[in-house]
Image (tube, rainbow, N blue to C red; front, side):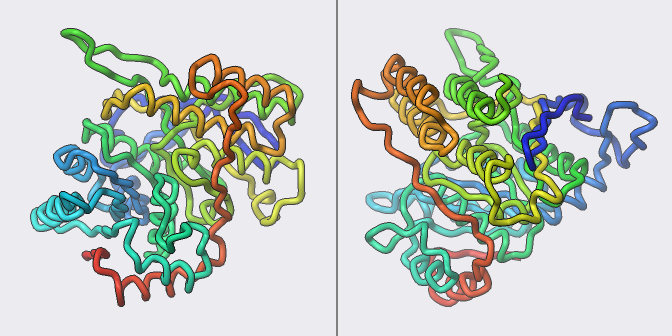
Length: 391
């Protein structure tokens, strides 16, 4: 059970909880039997996961690793694969679809698969009333955030109650399985219809020399968490370290919350979700969706047992990610000049920004509330050459 929580207007942000046991047995135990502990049985987990869609954004990832990720997602959840892989010299999307179809033949589990650059998205999104993902060429822009929002729209169209995300470059299928169980456990605990759960990795693991090295914190995450907490302090006037999951790619939320928060393009999406909720629901202004304040938003941060092992990116990728995530805080309406100066100094000191270079704002995407996903899905089913839906 969460032992500490900070309340910021309509937000309840819980401090990190830890998984104690990977399996709680066949059925749940009453809370009074294990004071301070949530014990969730397999049947309760499966009930929640049967109403969940898990979105897997893919971009030129190793097909064998992708297959492992699919094998880790619990069978009851609907898998939605949104690929932005290259189709030029080698059609990586065809390779991915072959992997997925083979997996389907063996497991008969439901999934949806579509390419992010499918030209039919232009008509589908325009008719649905959400053209904000489209670029000047009429196609969906490149970017992880854009792919994730497409996944949310498809989850909503399939009438799922929850939507979660796992990255396609996770080498440990067991970690993926645990993440989805963690999502379900958080939704079981939640008292509000507006709930989010974010994974705090226990370790990011890399192979150094002849042995593994278990790093406690990610470099980009640690820096972004620091400035996200400083942003909160601008409202409360008290320093805090409550946020420890600013860059959590593995996270999930209720569809009702997903409909009422804004998103951002590219790698900015994970940190911008926090920024949007702080700006919109901390009480500094009247929110567009006032019903959210009546029920509050619950944000759970949970540390799993499995270490996180994923594809190692270069320093250039890390610099780009740091620049992108910190831009969400820098361009927040709540950031003052002192905080903005600190962010610029940090980026310059780490070589992620040149002296006197402008920090570009993130591409902001409005909430999906009111989007006609039925029209979107109908257009895709009628004309898309990349859409695959199995049952």
